[in-house]
Length: 464
Image 1 (cartoon, rainbow, N blue to C red):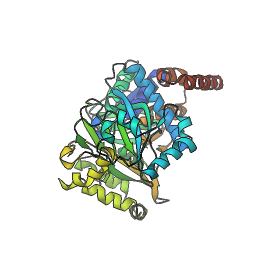
Image 2: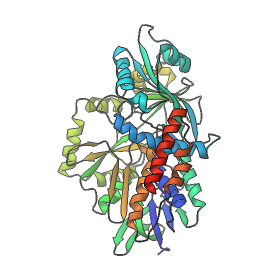
Image 3: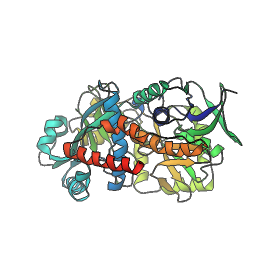
Image 4: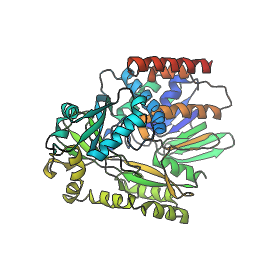
């Protein structure tokens, strides 16, 4: 048995790394251990090739309600502020223009309503409504070759953070390791978590670890561990694998299309790669796969564990996939993986962003794309679009924080409050210092900065 530790975090992706950073730097918890099955931090879904590299603020994500955008905005600003302070040379991120593009009168009217009537222009002071001429100045290829009689509208902002989430996760872990009492074990697979009368035993292929509290932040596998311990019986997963198509230098920033209603998956967009602005990525696609990790057959049996093969799971899948919008979308995404046929089928999505592209200009990216699990509520038999957490007695399972990596630090801040309640000792969280190191560095407009300072004053007074 290894030496006892106060807290064990299982999973070294952006979620687990964010929590490790927050606990180590801003609480007085004595000992915290992170255990990761891969030999490096953020090797799976947080790796830069396996996600959209987008920091979601809620400004151009047209499937967000105003209330959802308000929640996401703070989380994105926490991470953006961290990047501004910790990555001045932009080795972990790039900052470019981003926009959501409306093609035609109907889409233009939707963006107009969203900006003026629904409150998004007020919530995001840097967001602007622009037309064809300004779109052409920022993104020439978006206008080039398009019918001049087609109306073009966009909501645009300079806050287009393109992020290497794997590099960010590593920076969190490196910062945490500077503190006493932090231990990181890589290449160590957790095989079981056992709850006893005096805490938890985390069994691994490299020995056992003991802890007073445990947080499982292992993505899709978190629900697998939860179910093995008797939690999450009313939940299943719908694993969705995202892929991308690559082209040469076509875009300067990030260009989104409007979200299709009723779909939980990201709208197709084009953007320059975080580390190579000469490569443009288009995607993601969204293919259903019976596995918890892309390209790993060993995780098919893991999917079977979380699916459960219960009548409720089968009925839930049938109800979800029978939707008249979702089912054709699922079928179409299966076609995208077929050589030659796939890219021609995907081409109209690309041409909505860059009309002059033809099939010979794009290639499916090999080795790109991760698995994003969608939570299935087997009681309502519907997809659960919210944040997925399960809290037990001394243990917390983070399954798929929504909208993912963008709110990793906000999730960590919330999880710290939960974790500190697990302990009998009186540990504290220095939220003011946490905010200074993160959201305190986020660049604002002058008027916005004044409002933010006023909000911080109110928060500080409330804490006192």
